[in-house]
Amino acid sequence: MSMIAIKQVSKSYGDFQVLKNCSTEVAKGEVVVVCGPSGSGKSTLIKTVNGLEPINQGEIVVDGTTVTDKATNLPQLRSRVGMVFQHFELFPHLSIAENLALAQMKVLKRSRAEALAKGAALLARVGLSAHADKFPGQLSGGQQQRVAIARALAMDPVVMLFDEPTSALDPEMVTEVLDVMVELANEGMTMMVVTHEMGFARKVANRVVFMDAGEVVEDADKEAFFAEPRSERARQFLSKILAH
Amino acid sequence: MFAGFDFDVIVRALPYLFLDGMAFTLTLTVLATLGGIVLGTLLALMRLSRFAVLSTFAASYVNLMRSLPLVLVIFWFYFLMPYVGQWVTGAANPVRVGPFWSSLVTFTLFEASYFCEIIRSGIQSVPRGQVMASQAMGMTTAQTMGYVILPQAFRNMLPILLTQTIVLFQDTSLVYVLSITDFLGAAAKVAQRDGRLLEMYLFAALVYFAISFTASFFVRRLQRRVAIVR
Image (cartoon, rainbow over all chains, first blue to last red; front, side, top):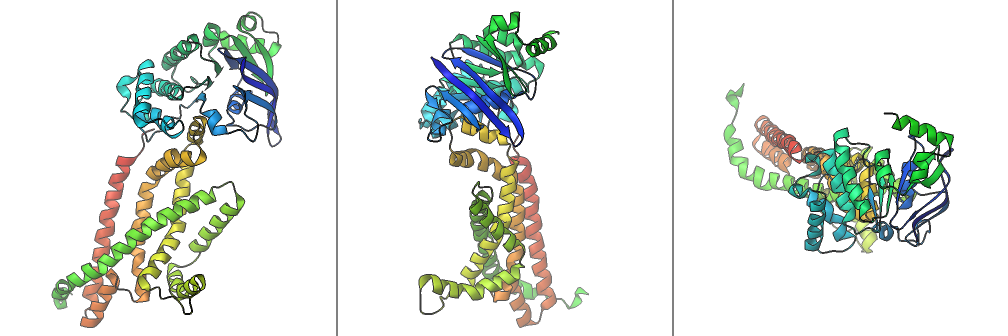
C-alpha cells in the first residue's frame, strides 16, 4: 500500500517550471532517497508532499488523504507527517523541552505533562537528555538536527520527510544525524529523504529517485540505480559525487 | 547667571509637578503604549495579510497617520470626537469626551501606526523556515503567529518598541495644547503663576532628560539580555 503517491505533479514560479510532470511513490515501510544536482527541484518536490508548496497540476495522496484537494484539512494531515529541514528550524525562543512539547500540546491537545514526558523519551532516544533545558542556540548543528528529528517524531508521524537534513552541517556532525536516521529506517519508519549522502542511500534506501531540471529522470531500486543507472545524467551525477 | 535663581520655587512645586503632572504623563504614556502595541500588532497582521482589502486598509491608515503632525491630530480628535460620539450613539448633543480620554485615544491611534511598522519589520525578521516548521507540525496560521512568530518578533523588536515608548513619553507633552496638566503643563502653570519661567522650564527639561536618558540606558542593557541566540 502506498503511503505517498505523487502523480504527474507540475509547478511553476511564473515562467520558470520547477517541477515537470513528476510521479513517484513511497510504500509503507519503504525508504526512498531523492537525489540530484542543486536546483533540480527535489526540495520543492518534498515540500509539496505536506502541502507546504502548492502545485499547479497533478495529485498527491498521503496515507489515503488527497493533499491537493481544497477540502483537505491541511493542518490535520501535516500533524501526521513529520518533516525535518535543512536548517533545523528549532524555535530559538523556546527551550529544547518546550520545542518538543509545543505542537503536541497545541495540535494534538496533549496535556503539558504528557507532552513533556513524550519529549523527554524521544530526547533520550537521540541521546540528548542532558540538553532538555538548554536553548537551540546553545547546541551544535548536529545536536540541533537530532532535536528536530525528535520533535517531528513526538507527533507520532506515519511518515517522515527529510529535506537535505545534513547539508547545513559540519562534516564531523553528519554521522550522528545519519545514525539516528538509519536507526529510524531499521525500525520500519516510512521515509522520503532528499539528500546527497549516497552512503546513507546505499545502506538503508529501498529505492532511489534521481531528479534533474525539475523532472524525475530515474526511479529505480537501490541496487539497480547504483549498479547501472539507466540515464546518462544519473551516471554523470554518480560519477561526480562518488569519485572521492 | 544663576544668582537670581529661586530654587525654592521648584521645591515648593514638586508635589504638584510630580503627583499631578508626572502621574498624568506616565499614565498616558503607559496606556497609549499598551493600546498602541495591541492595535499596532493588529495593523501589522493586516498589512501582511493575503487579503488585499485588509492590507490596503492598514497601509492607508499607517501612511495617513505618519503624514500628519501629531499636534494637528490631537486638535482634530479633541474637537471631532464629541461629534463622532454623537453620531455613533445617536445622542441629541455632542458627547462630552474630556481631554484625558481624547488624548488617550489620539495617542493610541497615532502611535499604533508607528508600532505597526516596528512590529511588521519584527515579523519579517523571523526566518520564513520558522513558519514552515510550525505548519509542518500541523499548527494553524493563528497558532504559528501566536506561539512562534510573534514571540520572536517581539523579542527582536523589544529595544525599538521601548525606544518608541521613550519618544512617546516626550510627545505626551503636546497635550499641553489641550490645557491638560501633564508634567510640562504643570511646570508651565507654576512658571506663569510665579513668574519663574527660566527655573521651571530648565527643571522640566532636566527631568525629561534624566528619565529618557536613564530609560535608554536600561533599554540597551535589556537588549543584550533578551537577544535570541541563534
